[in-house]
Length: 232
Image (cartoon, rainbow, N blue to C red; front, top):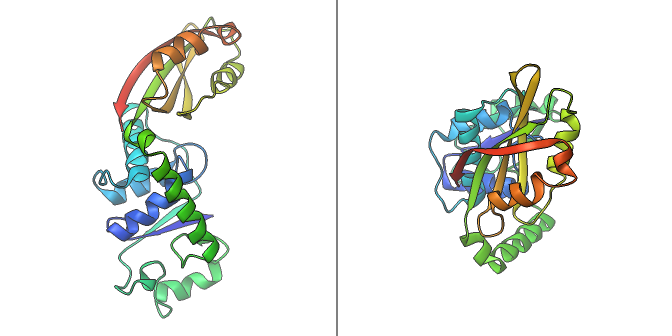
């Protein structure tokens, strides 16, 4: 289903987008897609650091575009302009708007993320805000976006099992992102994979030396190299 955002350059629009990305790594799906590129382009510049989740996502997509590009199609995203000044209307287009009338027959395909919040949603948002406040120290520690090259032993290595083995490493402050296979010659392919880390919780060197290149993962992984490391 297509996702709709309104006036993403305004503080109110950025706040809504920030809440939306609180529990998501990408605009739609589980890897970067053209939906992310659409919203990234609509912002035109990096958002203020006060929008923590939007800043994390923006820098991650920016790094992907510079390093490996994005080819996934996505589910579709719609970027609307500024809504009326009234507070309630910021989230929902006017009833008489011709666009809204034309979209009535397509309600099943478009999801309005910025509609009026229910009591349940407000309570959930308050709980999330309280959790963020309670973990203030972790928030201040900062995050980094990392691109790794993961190399197999030879051309007979099962790359699907290699990826599964790498993603099986789970720890607090580590989030795996998009990956792809890149030919290196002689029928051998390496895997490039994005990850986001909380700096005070995860050391990339430790991740490689104590997790990715030891048993049982070293059955598939010969070595790992850091290709890019960017602070978020």
